[in-house]
Amino acid sequence: MTTTLPTGTSAAPAAPGATTTSFARATRLVAEREVMSFLRMKSFWIGLIVLLVGLFATAVLPSVFGGGKDKVAVVGSAGAAVLSGTDFEVREVADLAAAQELVRGEEVDAAVVPDTSGASATGVRVLALSDPPTDVIAALNTAPPVDLLEPSDVGSGQRQLVIMVFSLLFLIFGMGGTAIAQSTVTEKQTRIVEILVATIPVRALLAGKILGHTAMTLGQVLLLAIATPVALGIGGQSELLSVIAPAVGWFVPFMVLGFVLLAAMWGVAGSLVSRQEDLGSTMGPMIMLVMGPYFLVMFMSDNAVAMAVLSFVPFSAAIAMPVRMFAGEAAAWEALLSLGVLAVAVALVLHLSTRVFSGSLLRTGSKVALSAAWRTDRVSSPTR
Image (cartoon, rainbow, N blue to C red):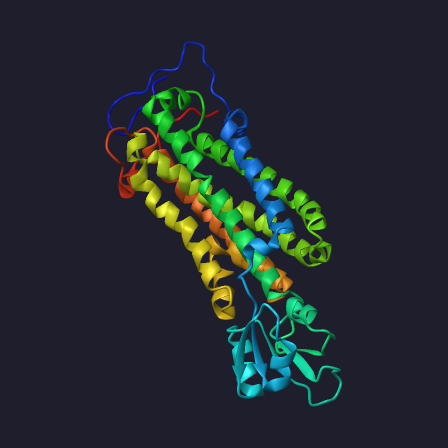
């Protein structure tokens, strides 16, 4: 049997006596090949080790992510006196209202103000936004009363750490999908793909690549999820585990579905060109889809409305919703709804990507336009 190419050329005929392979078996075989090829790569193991080392460093060395000296506002001479000799960046303000404004605006980490209730032995109270400023309290001779303007179960530092970790993992694994595009281009450039489609369905080739790389991603995410409690325990942050565990539980399914969404599109990016040198022209939009959610969540994490919207956008939901669940800003039904929206988007993108992949895989030469790949009849591939 000869496979007809959209360009008018022909693929190599199947070997005499060759048998076709069912879709399920072909998908499994391609997935196994992708997994085994990655497991043989030193770069894969080096990258995994770097991720684990980074996780433990983040838990054990939180000071690395600190912002230097604490900024403290003081009201009155009593506050200035108790902070004399400390290593804080002190900012004197006129009254309590001004101190509260600086704390709410996060221009200072805390404020030391006069205590009018008489409950403090030092005559001052400490104002903070969402979590007690332990450094400021520890610097005072006697622990003063602490007033939180916006109490929260999760400290701002912990929230920023979780946002950074979730966003970075999404970025790393999302960009890892480039391997799907690169392997697809390699198969086209070496003409191996013409042999493959003579014995297996074209759709199975894309499905196998997605399945194999998704399995690898899931395995790495689960490994990091198992290592997280150990890292937090070593870093003396075991109490954080009870708060972060639910968020990690949500992050795993969101991350897997988000990766499948991107993986299907990475496969299309590779099928549209025939040389590694041309891959950059199709990778640009994909890089934006990966980098965009990363920067949006990082820069808009304090905007509740923006985070709520990002939680229901398929490409950013994998980061935004787990972060909101961690901070207690979203209900379980919201997470389930967001997960459902993401699942529907994955199904739609898989369908569209499969058609474009089938219409462009056997086209060689210059870059294939999306419209041309879409209009092309599905290539004739062997089926049972």
